[in-house]
Every structure is written in structure tokens, then in C-alpha cells.
Image (cartoon, rainbow, N blue to C red):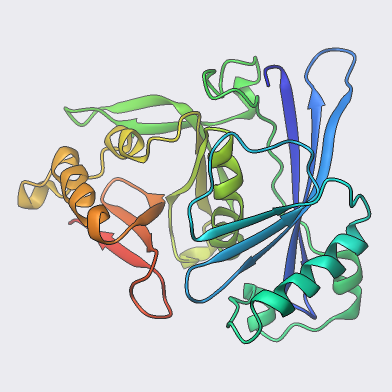
Length: 276
């Protein structure tokens, strides 16, 4: 789908801890035209499984992994009805399975106003939905700060991706919920910088126009040179780990990665790897 731009809003019901995506696709030509719009209602469980109910008429380009169940109902255009169907589906097939709550609901926020209106991420990205094109090739380079990596001699390397600042409280949730949708289009969404909220610094979330995580890891130069560990060694170690413990990389930086293991590490479902 060349010359198509996307708007994605992440909404949250702070009372029920439910999340929803509102997605709209437009032509990027002068005569802007709505190509498609749909709602997606994702649910994540403690055991690593996810269920996504949406009403898009467009089938994904990639087969979802076994841990991700996709229920596509294009004839249900009313989002309220779609939500009721999702709740009934979960009650029937996932009764008693513990869900992962949203971050604000875990803090006990219960304002009725935000439940009615939803809460939208303060970040909006516009991108071409063509994995073969660079995200910086559409003429909007000034609006998209490039993702800067490291080459083999330690110099800065401007990659084909781009990165934006996202408040630390939102970054993890944005990547967790939106990464599967971008992967279906051949893009890889990940956290490129993580500051843990220190000094109120925002994290950096990056988007790369191909889905090979090991290519990205080499481009950002993830290493532990203090122990003679280079990017190739880390890639080799992760490939071995992947054979027995399937995972996705949700964060990749100069000296760290975050792995979300499919069936490991108890409730955390995460492994933080840091090479000094």
C-alpha cells in the first residue's frame, strides 16, 4: 500500500482497564481520501497470550504467532457493539485467565470522565505503509528525527529508521500494544532509549522500515566491548536463546536489549540484558 499514511490513537478506559486502537488510513496524494478505518481491541494475558478483536476489512500480510489470536469482524462497524462482542468472546474462551492491566488502572485511576472520552497518546506518527521504502523518503525528513546507530568503528550512523520522544510512562505500553500491528506491515517498533523517568527525561521509541530485529541490533551497535562482546556475538547468543525460548525484542540500545519471553520469567515476562 504505497502512498498511504496512517493515524493511530491509543484509547484507554480507566475504569475497566481496557485499551483500544482507532486507526485511519489516508492517501498521501494531494486529494486526500480515506482508504480504511477500523477499531482494534487488544487484550494481553499474564501467560503471554494476546487476543485482538478488530473490524478491519484488510487482512494482515503476516501470519500471527500462535500466542496471538486475531478475531476479524469487518461487518461489525459499531465500535460499541464490537466491544460487547469482545467481552463476550473473552468471557467464553478466557474466563479466569489473568489479564495484564494498563499502567494507569494499576495506579487506581477511576475518573469517569476519562473512561468516557478515553486517553490518547500525545504522539502522532505519519508513515508510508510500504516496507520497501525508507520512512525518511517521503519528503518529511524535518518532522522525523532519524534513528542514529553506530558503525563498526564506533562512529555515528544514520539509519533508515526514525525515533521520537515519548513520555516514559507511555513508551512501554505503546511498544507492547502497537508493535504487532507494525510487524504485520513489515515495520519494527521498539524502544531505542530508556531513562526510567530519571530527571523526567522522555524515552525514545523508534520505527524501522524492515522487520529483521537482528539487522536493527547490528545497526544500533548493541555491544559489551568492555568484555570483548560485539554485536555479532550478541546476535549469535540471541539466536541460540530463541531456539528454546521464543521472544520478541521490545527494546534495543547501544549496550542493552529488552526481551519479552513467550513462556518464561513468571509474571514479569521480560528479560533485561545489559552489556557494560
